[in-house]
Image 1 (cartoon, rainbow, N blue to C red):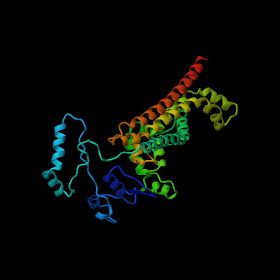
Image 2: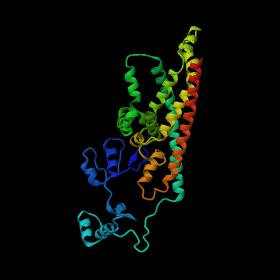
Image 3: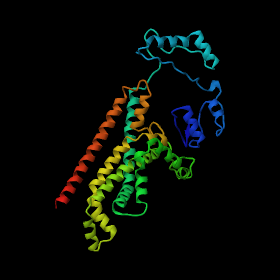
Image 4: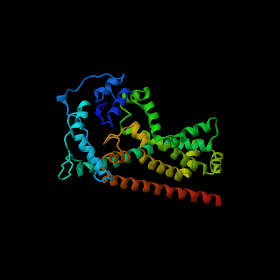
Length: 345
């Protein structure tokens, strides 16, 4: 189906129809029977038979199973007169074998090594970009919210803290749906952003927003703990010497909390790197645009030939995540030593 000036391949025909029905995309190519059953869309044109390649449905028995004979019997039934009669009655064309009976070689081809390498490279690059953008953009709100929750008591503080932490307990898919309800192309805010040249659905911006929202709670938790660990005595002393609140924050509070803030950034980066549910709902699974490592792994899992290739992405994901967590642990230990030194004095 189409979105803005690009085309996006949907996960299913029904999914494409749903996006059109909700106004997220302007045009979709779906089955005519599905379109006729959906009252909120209209059929603009119909591809006649000579204009398109006929859809093929494959019968794929397992290569090795405890029920080899049953699988063979089913395939033979489908290819037999009785099975063909049932298929013709339902509007299907006659079946034809797609596997060489003598060699067992599947006649369909898979992606080349160069294609897989380019796809893997794109997924890793997009994951790093999305995680970096989410971490960078989340720095200011995380520091602001962390300081506010650590240093101020005000009406509604518990409510604010609950809202900030909500993505930790809300299923990511639900979070993605809520974001789509606010930032989708058919919403006022989403339409405004699109008119300004910043469409959210099916873009790297959408993937970054999803990662930001899901990773922000971990960011704020770490930053809040860092500010709570700063002895208020230093801030009070700064103010008694005539420093303004802003000067005290930037010259005293922020430098002392910096290791904890950095640890929160690393943790948020790692969380953003593995985000899946909110991303797939808000940004889709578009190769080269929003297909991160997590989405690429999911895509390969749906492909019979993707089980072996998947280990490349799994290895890259584990390596990057472990490096990020190692950085978090290092910064956390540094913060802990600082606290121990403070209380020792």
